[in-house]
Structure formats: C-alpha cells, structure tokens
Length: 174
Image 1: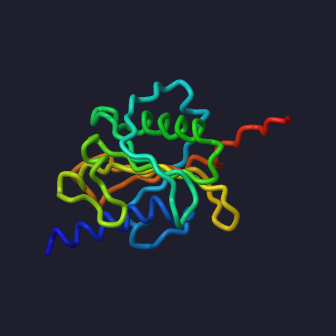
Image 2: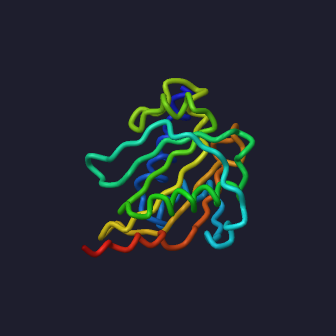
C-alpha cells in the first residue's frame, strides 16, 4: 500500500509541474514546497550543467514541447538548476509552452511514463524536478522550476519563480 501512495504523490507532483498554471496550485502540493524567486539574469555567470535529452515529443492534447532530461546527481544544486532552466528557456523560446522533467538518471528518464510514472521505485526516485513556461492564451504563466534537493525525500520540494517566459525570437521578414 505504501508504494501505491508514493505513486500518487509523484503523479500529483508531475501534474503540478507540467499542467498546473502558475502559483494557484492545489493546497496539498503547495504545503510541501517553499516558494522562492530568482531571475535568469542572476544565473548568467553560473555554468550550465551538462544534460542529456532522453525523450522529446509534442503533446497531442496540450500543445507544447515536452522534454525528459538527465543530469549528473552532483549537478543538483539550486544555482545550477536555475542556470539550466534559463538556458532551456532561451533555447526553446520559440515554443508556446515548454515542459521539462529532470531526472538524475538517463535510464530513468528514458523509462518514465507521464501517465503511469516509473515502472519501479528507482525510476520514480530519479525524478528530481521540472521546469515549465507557457504563453498559450488562457493558460499563460511565467517560468517556474520545481526541484527536490534531497533525492530520498519526496515530500520536500522547492519552487522557484523565474518570472516571465523568455521572449520569443523575432519573426524573420521576407
């Protein structure tokens, strides 16, 4: 029974990261998070950690780009993740919406399923956070980064508001 409860917590967390628009999140999730603010201009001097894209796809129901990426476990620090989130935002600024799941294992990022979660406990514990933004009309919200500082504590996460989404690139005139 305990494992079943864990999957519910993880699933709720992923829905929160990927689908919920902005700070008006469910009370149960908001209680487990500490809210912070940062800006991408603060992260400009921080080195962006190396990452691997395990999966990349477009949503059928919800427009936008979805990425599952992995980092080295040693790269999970607040400053490095902010630098990574800002870089991903800049690189994908042309997207209307961007949803990124961040894992500390490439294998877990490949195996994770958005609907069912991970096939095992190790895969679920490898999920460490997410980054998202949306400029979609009616569902627009700023950039946000959610992450778990302690891999083994699924009930403690930090939410960092990164402000407005990165500006889209200028349209090329022909």
